[in-house]
Image (cartoon, rainbow, N blue to C red; front, side, top):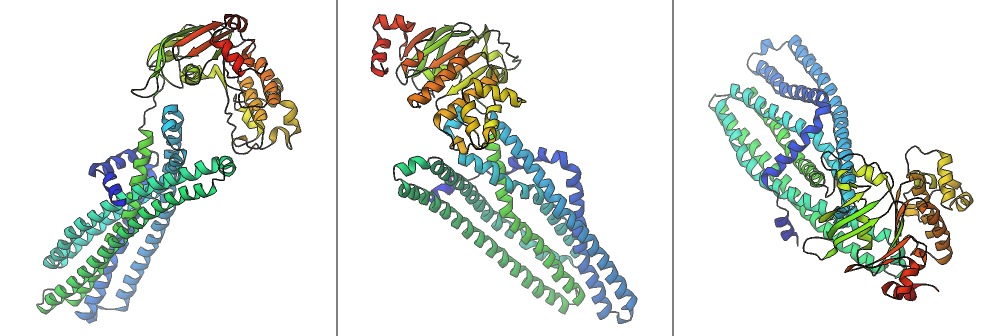
Length: 593
């Protein structure tokens, strides 16, 4: 299972570079912090490279020219080193404070951009996406980008200075020994690169699997009422265990690769040390270097390997960051199926007349036409009911008006203006939707009603609740309008949630209204209350109502019966009943009378 996953998730070599290029613009607002951070990094590196030279100076003086080793020289070198360490401490403070804050700011900017882009994506994207996976990407993945954004330029800059600086200094001491030491580096880089590549692929797969696990947990917890009503706890535990073990498998593989990675790095560490000691000792015997030079070599090898080891240890963080950036790009590069066309203007809705002109719509490629060459004219202020069997396209018809989906051909006009020629924001601002499955946000009753219009006053919110028939029960709640409704409004009944949703639309006050089976899930008493609220809401508005309970549409101005063949029947309730066709048969089957 893991082997096949690795093959499937193998990352093209140029992809990491592409990810880094996409991150670079996020440095732009903080370029001043980045430059000073790299300056501080260079200061810490200079301090580290200076110590072996100071030790070499003292050792040379002690072994070759003892008379030159004075107290003044020792104190001067000691004072210089303390000064360098003070500079190092100040620079390190800046790197670990402001540098990390810079990374956090970049993470914040990226999370803002990702969330903003998610708001633009169409329903079709969310039909195929898992919310748990998206949440993992917008939180956990971007946290790793913070560390990457700060440490990546810093670590590579420090390593570059240390390697070049050490090479130049050591060449000035002894070129043959320096070349021998640095000859081992290419071999080490090739071996480490292979481990790093496999580690990165395992890291990316672990992200995918934790996203899947999050989605499983979310699905189970949101459906906890169904789980308990069907005694499905054991089934959910097995489903979770499967995902949990799958995540464990890839994490175990990742840590095995990490262990091998660090083990091999320590092996090369030992090889470099022993090579320096053996070859350096031979050079001492031949008089090519002295003991002070060998000590300096060993200290620089220590510095070199501390740098290389730091890069190797950073590799895990590097690939976590690259993976996070790539997953960020996967979302932000997803183009919305529906967006404003160039030159789109504001919709000036003067009445709410709606025209469908030869509209054809298909779900997915190769699917059947849900609507085919469909034409319909809805007059200003008309109350139109759409009834018919499931799958006939009733909900699709209503979803096309606010451009939740796009027709394959034909066009839809509001007051003579093609809806593709207006901005999505202005189009949807003129349309109110009340659905069967009401969604209330996790907040207070007041906040959920106020969602209908920004800046609404308490008086306006109260009036909207009154018009929706919700004022009485809201005032009876423990904290009135400030009562917390719970996740998805779980603390309220279905009828109460529906009336709050209607109050929200009252506050919005749109000229066009879509009622998508708004009462079908309610009991008789709740339905009566909600139906009264909807009647008040529909007054003076162009209203399209989808209903299964045909008794709720008896008073509509016009009723159309929509089937797979299009509009089969059309007329008032009385006309359709007298005709004795599909509507009359449906009414006899589903009505309560």
